[in-house]
Length: 459
Ligand SMILES: [Zn+2]
Image 1 (tube, helix red, strand yellow):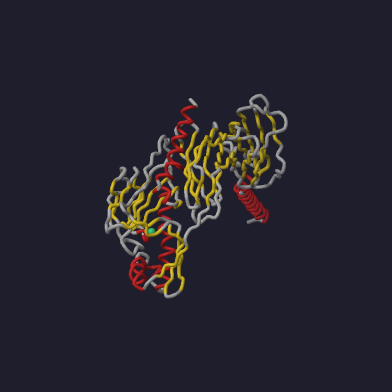
Image 2 (cartoon, rainbow, N blue to C red):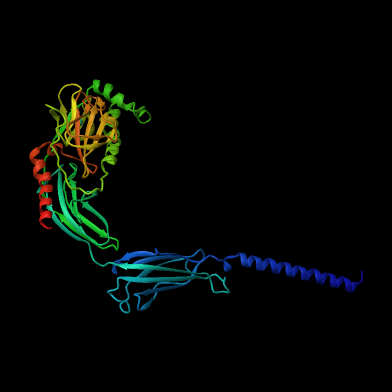
């Protein structure tokens, strides 16, 4: 090999090397973020409502970083380009806050068109970046829902219930409920005529105060509130101490603890008593609350109720709202509220359901033993506990005065008796009210009938 030929060979080798490195480099460059091809994402629905007041927030984001954002609002005749204060390029995401501009857009427009475009900092598309564009039709609704109380029960007892009938009107009504001071929302049902609603509300026995407001919200976020005014009747409830005997603890309590072997196997008798009376009661009540919180949405045209009278010649042996402290071997080891009344007559006596309804639960439920729950409409439920036998099945229609179960001593019961509860959308209320024909007529059935008369006159 000559010297010259040797030099040429090295040069060719270098050239190949340079080309290979360049190809590798360009390839790396194209595969890198600089030339990424993913456009920004604009989180915008194609159609929605707006009240022109609360700012609209549109979330825009990119996998790498944003370069430009354009927001245009049009009323069909004029288009206004909205400045994006606060937008800084090279950020990954941006919340565009959109307010009605002071000029250029008609205040009377029923529909607006929003156009948002975003470009990212990628060098793709001949250094122009990836772009995204989204448009939305905005339906304008700046009118608040109308709320008018029509008629209601005069008062509400602590631990008791009341009925209210009202009008709620809005072209785009989205949500309607009763807000309370104790974090419970009651849902109304449509009543008799268009835009009218009925609702049963409850004042839980464990709450010192009661207040309730109707809340109506439309699709554009306009919100109205109207207070439900009832005469508030505070009531004192009993406090009692129950002495738990060894027979009771070693019998009923030990038996019930076997329902939850994992949680109770290492507990002392006193701890077992508290577990059954507190934790297990809560678990059982949770099941009841879940079932009885449901409300149908059917139009209510009638709500004729007979007083509840579940046990013929039944003697009241324990009252509602009793705050019970359980004493074992001289010490208070547990406490609970008694959220029903106890009625006793003979063993395995007939349990009557005096009102029509549908069985929604017919099963064993811990301290309630064999437990039957019947739904009567408008969020009202009746509950029967400690049954020896349940004669209806879940889903069965119950007819007025039907024998639905037999009394017993299943669950946390000493002797044969019926534990009877009334619930309104998951809240236990005073059964005494629903057993009392005068209370029922004045506070419920007359209110319904008077409301219907008032609405008939409006024709
Ligand atoms: Zn009871």
